[in-house]
Image 1 (tube, helix red, strand yellow):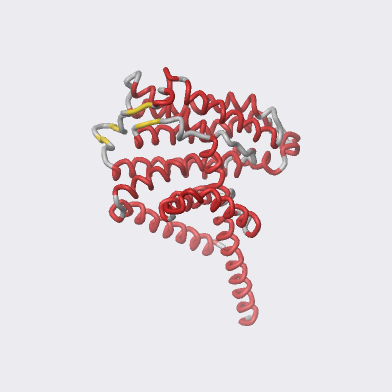
Image 2 (cartoon, one colour):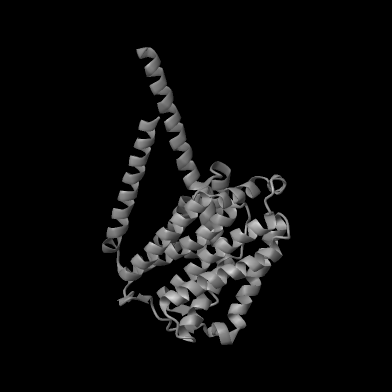
Length: 332
């Protein structure tokens, strides 16, 4: 048993090393344009990770994530442009403010049960997009916010796409580690208890309203991080970025990759982001392609790409264990 655990750890270390090498050398294999696409994809991954926290861990489906992303972005933009705050200050304020707003909204909207919360989140997304478009003194209105300063800290200035890539990559790694740890914590188990059976969770002493609001706050914090990263990466914020269509796309990304793991959010985000570039001549038909893809996926592989990979691995492991067991019996 101990030997099996050691092998598993070595396998995990090997995969981590391979991924680290790929991430380190990836910028050298890409053009500046494709690297920018990758940077935006990693930022969207953080938003998709927020969907995973709500849907994958807590079982709550929200269409307001792009709106929370926008709150984080405009908060960072105002801290930098109007108050002269530094990069770290803008990042922390974006995280805290978006998390607090999300928690308070959760206390209101999670009083609605089941699909009523989902419908309410659509209304919330519409309200937020309207605020982004019309609250000129805060968001710049239809003209948006421009000339947002890039990330800088202790003499380091992210003034190239490569530097921005490594800043975003480090943040994504840290966020993923935190969410993985969260899933294994007591709070994460409370999320999953609500996801599996909210009534039973309440009977066990879990306050579902507060717990779901905490999940919403954590997802908001992730959107706050993504908002700050997008603000300095793009340098320009527009209400047209933070729309209901973008929230729907985030949900599609998570469903495509799989809701059972943060890896599913990453796979789905990279797949769709890179697919958009590969089939750019078919841009007018992308919604049709996404729709058909999701329908087919839900029919044949409802657990997403990562779920399919995990299922194949489990079948292979089971067959291998049976084969080893049979060989051991014959040897005996």
